Image (cartoon, rainbow, N blue to C red; front, side, top):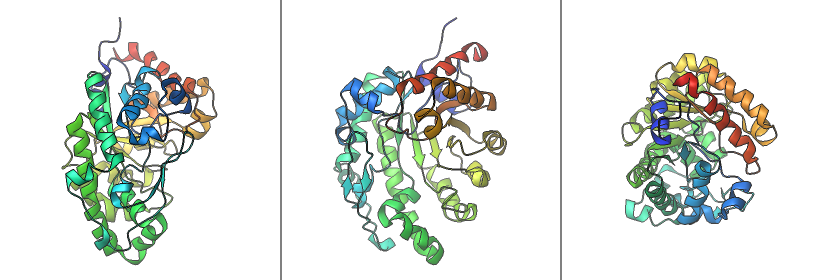
Length: 341
């Protein structure tokens, strides 16, 4: 017997907790590596701003690594220039970073019209890259990415100032998040219209910075509203140990949760139940960056046994991650063919 599902069908079926011929391997954040840049000739920082370069590097995740998905947004900073942030777009071995934070008050937040938003080079690059990829890869799942309002607030206000406001001025925080959701929704839907099959939605309310009570009070009601406004399946991504907020994540109606390996996946699975499928399972710093393929396979097999629907790195991978370690995830996924068939 051979695989009978296309990558797109396999990924989307698993995303919704359905039948698959084998477990898919996904990439909701980024698998761009220096090795892939050298193989494709598509390098940072051009790949953050030029649609053709972006599409070429993103496609390598499928063409070279064998993943079932393609994801052309490589950092967390694409929306930052649209908020008024000045940028350092980094280099081949350095991710972009915003160097200024223009907001002081909620009233400083300006929501551009769609046409103006699309004139921002980094925004336009992602949307155009998705169009290129959709035409070239009709049977591969294309994942877009739109930062949630909490992450956008980090860009606009600065992490420290924004987190201080959650304690000192919670009403300002609520007003800011309410306004910033419009950027999240607009960018997500632009990518859906361009051809994205699903949207990764990182909102970095991580356990080491944000208490579960803050998550409940600030983000739970907002996330529940946002999921009704985006026209594609949604993958929530939060770094760190999220077990203490998993019960709230289960209420938000995201289709899938991209989890960090700091989280006990067995317990996470119990809490989420059938409310959301899981994607992830492979640690970045110890296993993918510094481990060997056998270490990757061991962790991937554990994730499969724990019931993770889609294998993936836990977050955007370090740029010096060896391609052989990423290919090892695919090898484990292919072992599941006879189990799933």
